Amino acid sequence: MPGMREQLRNNMVALISLVVALSALGYNTWRNERTEQNRNIRAAGFELLTEIGSLQQIIFYARYAEDDQRGDSNMGWADVLTIADLAALMPVAVIRDAGELRTAWEANSALLAEDDAAYRRVDEAIDTLRQTTFESLRALN
Picture 1 (cartoon, rainbow, N blue to C red):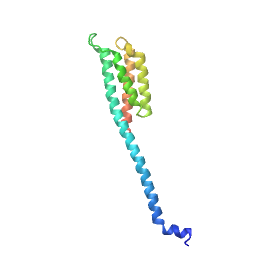
Picture 2: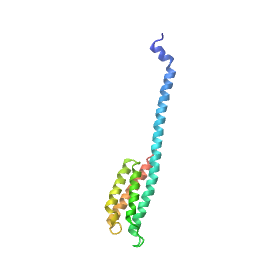
Picture 3: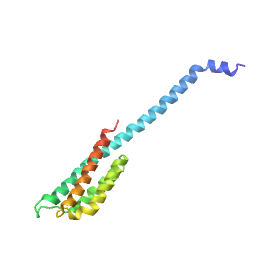
Picture 4: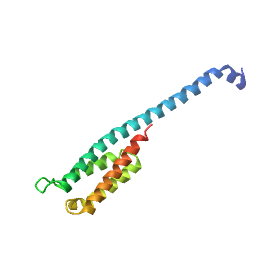
């Protein structure tokens, strides 16, 4: 009956092959998960930028359009809520900035037409979120 050392020597190629196969499987699984996560972030990021643009348009109309052309700033709530939902799929910095946008919107949306400071607070929150979203998309590898 062969000893342990002899069995290892006889089966070394099989053992090395098993280690290589398990390592490759582990790496492939990790890479697939990472790729899927990047795809989700990318898709959510592009949709987020679209919603940010839509909200930006609403605040421009609320602030600069003639009185009879002004939209209702309450229309922006749909965009703000969609932005919050999409941000949940993004990195933490985007989630944070989306929360700050929602806070700014809650406090200032009713005052957009009359108050320069309210408009600036919402506009700055939108710009910050846009920049954070761009940075998150650029960081994908």
